[in-house]
Length: 294
Image 1 (cartoon, rainbow, N blue to C red):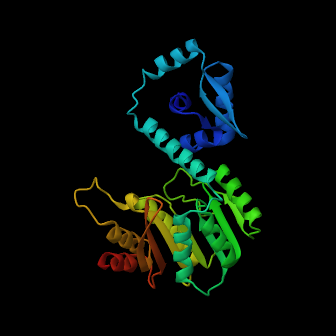
Image 2 (cartoon, one colour):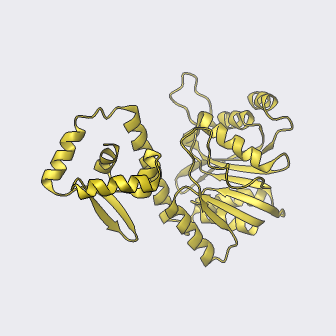
């Protein structure tokens, strides 16, 4: 039923659906096969990818929509599925443009380069591959570069870009787990000299958890860059509205990070907050207190 509800709204790939339902791709594929064999869904090939949508047969489509009309579409699980599916397709749409330079990408790469003009890292982790300029900078600024992509399609696009530019960079597809504490960074390696978080689009405890995982990877001597959309930090639903700049400083402090530089970046119609941070001398409570003071 959850698969039918998602495919009624849009044509989605196995990867998109697995991400939305937080299930393995083989399990989702088995269910999709049964739904296709029953005539309720149909396969739609788009280039090298296969997407699934409701059957175009009038009787089957009418039956499914009548069935879905009995569901409470405000159910928290269905709402979460729909939000996860939108996030997965947005990541794939961004991946389709990988390899295409942009003003925003050049601005982000310029920000990190300005913070480390002559430094060459032994190991660097780039989380997010939406901006090829950052991937190119990361590969050139480190001896060992690892990039994490949120989907298989994004990983393939990033690998193709790296091959075209002859960049020495390992690109992995790592998706965060269902548990809030599982950020996806736990399996990539024990230590990096620098971490770049490119548009995680998280808020609250989830962003703090991601930053804590990143801080653990860089130890006490590393550096972290964060690029977060302005809108993701606005918190307009709260009774006390906190300015995004103050919120980002507080969140960094809560994760045991000391904010060294914070700057807004605007390009291509996007508004991004860029931050440079390093581990605080005393992680934990002291870091949270320092972040609150800032």
